[in-house]
Structures are given as structure tokens and as C-alpha cells.
Length: 356
Image (tube, helix red, strand yellow):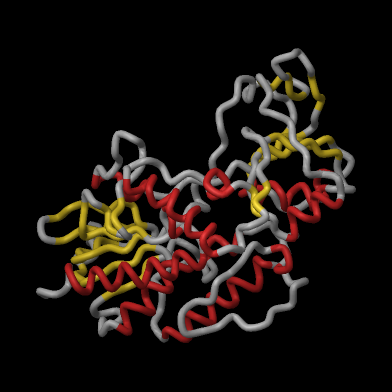
């Protein structure tokens, strides 16, 4: 006879130990909550590092778009030639040591559902009843590939950024990179001189040279914030900002690679075909088409609006005020996740935990 684990009760459960989850743990402890007794952090990974553990091995720190310091522990100087998949997980591991309490891992959260006055966090290690939940699950586990006619008949290789391991496996091949964001830029730079590349993006390229201006940054964040406030999907950063003129984009321009083709009409057995009948034979299609928020564990709460997104006010889910989303929408960046974690803890301490 199998014995079920006893139901645990805590004030707060943090789901995910990436930038947002670790920041939330820091702010919870400084708000007076005791780790292990009042709150815990659950993470599905085998080791610290979140999504950074799975970045492609050839991605070096000099090409990382940005890693914001976790609260209380600056990252400090790092060798720009080091692998991002090593440096950032090591930093996260050091941060967990600084916190001084273990992240529970690997624990997979299966669902979060209502259970009267508490939310029930159902995991493969048992169920936790919490007054509030901070969901900081990011996006890496939900790669997105758009539907194209002919994807099932294309005889070449198809893979997403999440499966990309580096340029060498494409040496001498003809590769189409699909997507208009930072990952697509990185792939094109790495593949230059190794493979024959074609860049496909849905819209015209808009290179934003003024993104360093704080007012422009705020404008971009406000666009995404308006989407989630209206219950629409957050959309990508590129859709709100255009392609920011990073050193990587400047390098594409210098190498004469900053040009794109529109989406094809369909994929055919040996490549792509456009509306005018033009065909391009290719060996592989690399879908650098982004990720979607990893929110499947929240499905029992029925948070989706008609627009397809989750309506959020600040970090709070409007349809379930005991739930805070960190790293969703306007906070889907390393700096945004830390700020959102601080805001979430401030709100839940004030509203949810005041009467405990």
C-alpha cells in the first residue's frame, strides 16, 4: 500500500528558481518570512541555473544580451570568453548558498488549484497548501514554432533554438534561420562562414538605435504591460521594440548580413517556396521563433482571457489575487524579473499575509 505524503501548509510557495524565483526568495526572507517554515522554493531542474543550464554550448558571455545582478550578490567580472551555460548557473548556485536554505529540487509542479482559503500546489513530491503562490517559471520549457504549410513534408532537419547546440553540426549546409529576435541574430553570427544562411522574418527589420534612451525603454515596457493588462498574450520584445542595435546586430550589419526574406508560402520536400514560385533548396530550418510563458501548471485556475492571455495588474493575476506572476509580460527579462519579485512580495505581504 502506497502512503501519500502528508499535506504541507506554508504561507508562500515560489515556483521556479531562475532570476525571478531566487529574487522572490530574497525579498520574502527580508520581509520576515522564514524559509522552510513560512515559504519554500520549488524547482524542476536537477541543479541551479534555470534556463541558463540549457543554453547552447557555443554561447559565450560576450554575446549574452544581459544578466542582471541578483539582489544582494553582484555577479562581478566574468571572462567574456566563458560559456554562458557555465557562468550563470555557477552564479545562481553561489546565490543559493548565500540564501542559506535549500531550493527543493527536482520537484515538478503539476498544477495549482483552488482549495478553499488556500491554493493547492500539487507536485510529484506531494501537495502544499499556500496562502499565496509566486509563479516564476519563465518560458524556456515552452519553445514556440509557428505553423507553416509543408512542415510535415520537408525532408531536411528542423530544430528550435532550444535544441541548437552550436554551428559545427551545420558545416557546409544551407540553413534558414527563422525569427527576428536576439537568438536569430546569435545564430546568424555563429553560422557565418560555417554554413550558407538565409534569414527569414515575418516583418520588415526595424533596427532601434535609440533603445539606450530610458524613455524609449519605458515605452517598450508599457506596450507589453498594456497587453497583459488587457488579457492579451504578452508578445515578443522585438514586436514591441524592433531589433535593438546591440553589438551583435552591429556585427551583422558590418558583415553585410543584415538583410532578410519574407516568410515563404510553404515548405516543400527540399526547401522553401515563396508566393512568386521562387524556391530555395535548404538542408535545415532553424526556428528562432521564441518561447511562450510556461503556465500549464496554472490551467486549473482558468486564468486565460478571451484574448488568449492572463490579465495581470502589477504582478497579480486579476482572476486569482493570491497568485503573482513574475517574469511574465513586462517583467520577462533579468532586470524585470527581479523588480517584479520585489513588487510581488510587497503586495502579498501587505494583502495576503497581513491577517495570518
